[in-house]
Length: 214
Image (cartoon, rainbow, N blue to C red; front, side, top):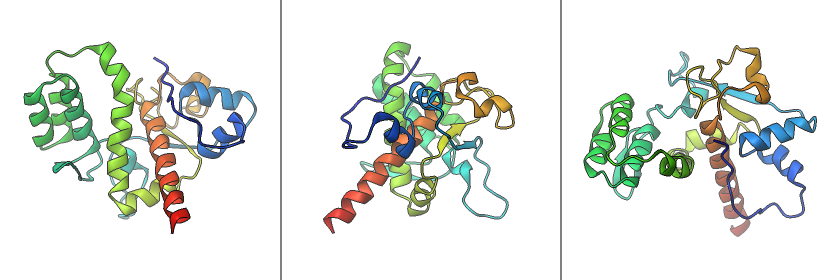
């Protein structure tokens, strides 16, 4: 499935290619089009949620399993994975699965709850999953100044979940695979990477709006 983010272009008179280069492509299709023009693209690969040994914040914070609680409408989600699976349950009106996902002690348990959602429909899920993950990460990065600054500090780098086992949210390749630098050779959609880049752009636009109104 090729995911395209729709919406009004808010970038004025800049060409589509210039916008892609400045803000980052928002789908695999856009990324492949951008690289086809010869534009140089810088990548930031990530996978896993293990913290750095020196205690500094690293790219592992981009993982859905990274422990960074955030609260929405009075409900606290331990990780973005908890949010995603609770949202999946809400989408199909499975209140029991939603409660299990929220209360899960580990993101794997939340994921298991999401896999057991009653009334699941793959087509409906594909229509909503990307926006759901964008929304959750807006809360995750928007409510934590350190995470927000780290994400914004990636500038226009293309964020890549270099998971060799995930062909939906990742690229189906490890970071040390030479094909990981070549989107035409990716084996997955990298939906998480593109969702994070969408979050990055929205946070950047929000910060610019606040500065303009100051």
